[in-house]
Image (cartoon, rainbow, N blue to C red; front, side, top):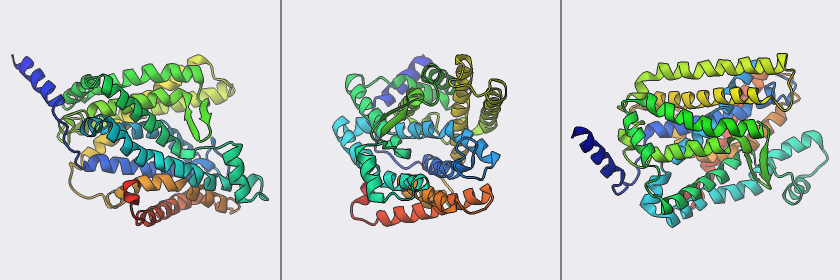
Length: 396
């Protein structure tokens, strides 16, 4: 009888009228922290083995990029999904999509025609110093290539929101099993971790084995990595399932067990991360860097990325849950309202700072640190200035 009563209560709460969302400081801080991770990622890439577009190099930055590239965009989709299903239920699909067009569509269009060409002009000047910006811009828009930089995230997220609206109209209870799993996850987060890991691996590993790590869909400024798109969708809809109802009493509850087992998440993240470096050594020193990689290699690599990605996300969420909705994060809280704008405008700032520092004979650490700190300061200042424009706060 107790089990049946509990199940009925959970079902009733799941289908209750959605409440207007309230600020969750732990999630806000996690999202702002991820924005800083994006800025750091782009700041250090030229000084890595992978990027190495600058004469200077530091192996520690390869360690950073391997870690960040393996999880941060997937976690962004997870955080974005948290309020998707409940937002659709509260506003209705049409109003929700209208809001998404304003929040994602307008910034994507504006950035594709302005921010991104300004950013990549710095790279073009390195190869062709005689080209003028107007000529470069027109060639980019009319002939291509028209790279999207980090704003690919916006159109892919909008596509997921659109799919979520269609699914909600057809099957509004579709994500209830994930929500029930989240409620149980308050006391048994390992159960949620295991299910999310299994589903993520089921979608990501075959995709990476089939497409490989370097295959991208590209159409004008619309681009996305073939092998990862289903991984991103998995994270988005797991987030949406958590947000259906009971988020304050589920996996992400400040009183839940998830935040109390952070050392376990750390171990679960470190082990596959170290194995990734073992695989990289095998690829470079034993296999001779073949292209494409053998299927067995891609499969094992993708599985380790999946474990690391889910574990590091749990670790970050557990860490910020320890704030327990109170206290102050000296940098993250003041930056929270500007975080989305900083994500949008930082890329040209980063690339032009790297262009400026290219000819200076400075250590890679000094260059990267300079780029990162100045990118944070300038992108924050630019966003603050843009937000003073009437109506801009509805977009940025």
